[in-house]
Length: 463
Ligand code: GLU
Image 1 (cartoon, helix red, strand yellow):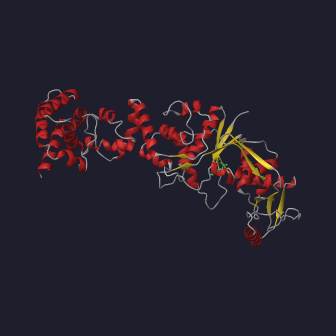
Image 2 (tube, protein in one colour; image 1 turned 45 degrees about the vertical axis):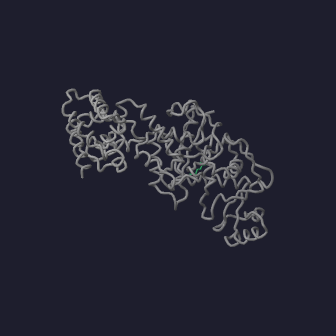
Image 3 (cartoon, rainbow, N blue to C red; image 1 turned 180 degrees about the vertical axis):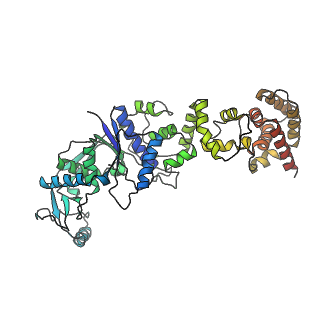
């Protein structure tokens, strides 16, 4: 049997990283079983569904490389299929027309609540033999007794009592099909074998199984993924971190890193913390996914991104960083040592946007000195700066090693500890206390510019 999974987003917002995780697990599960991964747009809610969200979702899946094996389908175009299925359920005696008005239903619920019962449709039209009309809905006749056992690849067996499920509506009075019916019919029509989705859908599952049974559809495999939480264990939202994939791309997180991090939202198997999509497909085991909510922590993404950036070849890293450098809007056409600079700076920050920003002092001028650094290191460093300026003028071989040995001589001459020696120069050159090795920093900055900046810093402290 070919395993077929699907990602079935409702296009009511841009693609959330929790959604990417669901798509990823579906994709990986299908690929490791040499099956198919499909996408279905669940856009039956006309009011909330938007074409722009659908496009955003599809474009994002594409940009992260989670591509469906068939053209995605849209539920909004498939009404006739669902209506036919509903009629088939009616003909087989598993559904009935119900003409309860909204007022009747409300009164019923109020009575139930008042009696301390769970409010639900009580099946009062079930045996009335009503005919279809403009004010009837079609309801599924759910078995009144017994239970439904959902066997979940992550959670094991989950039991639901049928008497707690009411007779859900399949067709509204205007003849349109409802969410659960469409979902079930499409899983069958798309030949889906395995439903992997968020835990928030667990309670839908027994209802959907009843519809499947009424239609005589085969059983499906289920896996309900743990919720994605923020560091405070509340459902991940914009308050915690960026939630749309676009934002992570524009900050310069690699697809590999995003995939790697999202796979870790619930799955902690495998031997390595840093892995590629292919390694994930090799090592992933859905039964190792945890039940408890999975915490998304940006610092983990940062760490993983640094590792993946480090693993890139020189050329690949350059290809990745160039758009971010160009985005800075700086004219760096005169700068001679770009390749070396990029290489030297590749691990100074956790994402490409921040790395590109760290290049500003070399390609252009930085905006201002880091205040703490100024107070801690720059003030009182006149003598150091002066000696370094003089030595830089006379160095013959403009190399990292030569510059480093010059700096060391001055350090010994002045009897300074390394930070006291190096940090004032760093601040003078880059505005901040962070940069690669100082010899390399000066080399990459160039002789003229280094001297100019050191003089500027001298002026700054004497003021
Ligand atoms: N359309 C549903 C959602 O976006 C998913 C339904 C499913 O996976 O069965 O939450």
